[in-house]
Image 1: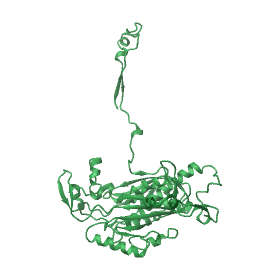
Image 2: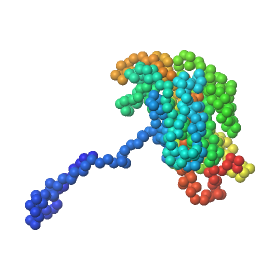
Image 3: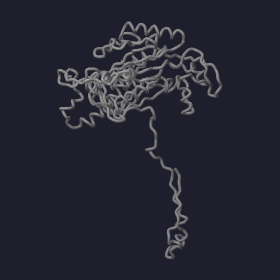
Image 4: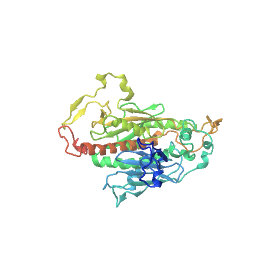
Length: 430
């Protein structure tokens, strides 16, 4: 930024000093001007605004739906952890398009490559670069969307913010952006499992008006195999069939529906989360609500807890056979005062119906002309089956970041063994 400063004469400096040379005499304080040349302030430069998540385990995602590829950079990963592309590919396969008739028909293998941060099968502690190429783009499907806005999509707001947007595939607003989240989340899940036996599992608990009854899934025993036993990712076979039928019904009519994903965390270390603004449930809410199509978040008893009295809602404490403090119920959802208490963490995330549908809708063009739009392209009739690994990933990223923060602040020196327990207490010893 260029600027100049003009000074006023000092009191008493009314005439030049006769001992100075004629050239210096002509330079008076009243005419002194100081120019500052433009300079780049590195502190003011914005880097990856809105695309980076985490403080200690830091993830930046990149890429667009119809670009060359998508992926992530993971910074802060601990060294010496066994890691291969196969560790990431399992969750990427659960997220990928074209996996069943109730998902988008876009055909992508979503095969990942690790380009840095791993040497001889273990992490090196340096940034991990993961890339997944795009191979099945159809840019011509988005011809109509280049001039008209899809109702309830990010098309209009991207133009309002940036004044320009990537039309093909929706650019960064496409769910393909979540590949970087799922890949980095798979690393986070492995760290949690290795360090403290922590498991993060999500499943579909509602599709449109098909709602899984409370208590029909045992959160103590439900397994990944049970969740993955059907294409809708609901561990209850009877309700899974009803959910699939509901999606099939709207899919054949060119419409879409929404639903709810429930996520649980077993064996979460105690002490994660910080008061006041960094409460664990607040961090989890931000993380999952940053996913595409999310519209609601419930934790523990959620909104249903408002119908209870304090005596009905409170989770009473007791001491178990191992001498650990536990709660008899878990309406708190495993977090009290913003800090994990060792019980199962549970939350629910609501996803809206997919915005892009095969039905004519009223909208406007970039020139503000009112028209009817029939959107083309390949889109999910219901996003929740593929959202399951996305929710797991964001929850795992929060937990690893909070685990590192807790270790640095509260476990750097010997803990108070009368009140605290090791962060990596093995499940067998719980």
